[in-house]
Image (cartoon, rainbow, N blue to C red):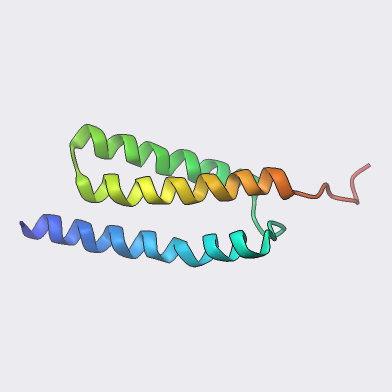
Length: 91
């Protein structure tokens, strides 16, 4: 394994692992009040594009990390849409 692959796998592990606590918390509590729909929509789209990029480049660290992160982000996005309570202050 080359140094570039090792760096890629370490980066992929750290960035994906950093996302897991938020995902677990959201799954357990179903509390989506603090989650921005716009941010998670853009984030999920961006991570999905990184996944496509990884496939096009045949870069396994990028593919693995973004496949996991896309799944988690998409799950949270679906929960945001499902459990979102409308703002009571809007008329």
